[in-house]
Length: 218
Image (cartoon, rainbow, N blue to C red; front, top):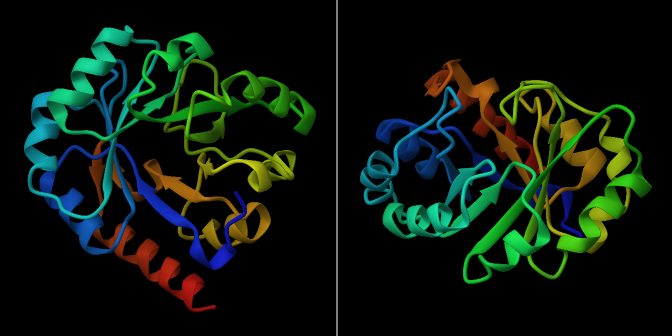
């Protein structure tokens, strides 16, 4: 659904520490992302995520999964306290249907050869099963956190029909242009706010939220 460019929500992903999560929450992030895929350098155990989530108020907490069993996703969302699941692999529409008691963000990775019609074709089977779509940059062998952007123009009018999270290489330096170009429901940042994978940098987060405040003030 179309969102005014000044109102884009913020998701901070790849969190592994309470102090970083509380800073993002205090800076009025709308979503906090915790990666439950063991192959990621930003992996956090559900137990450790729960300890963080118990101390955070305000943002919705998102569990990120990649091609993991439905039962594991269900159990982990319940045990960790995440209210939203982000499916960042090749999960099918039928897979998503089994999680219909949870809010779902279905991610798609955009490669250079993809165009608008291709993206619309890809997401159509998922529309009745998921709540949001996320578009990230395709980099072979990396499900996410690539730090690379894609051609935002290919999204076109998808934002008018769906709530879109824009991801992939977003930073303090390009987020204003990204919001102006795409007008997404939310922007999703991870690696550009880190000093190392899974370890956020307070100065980088401060600069980003200052930029978002400037964008929102017009």
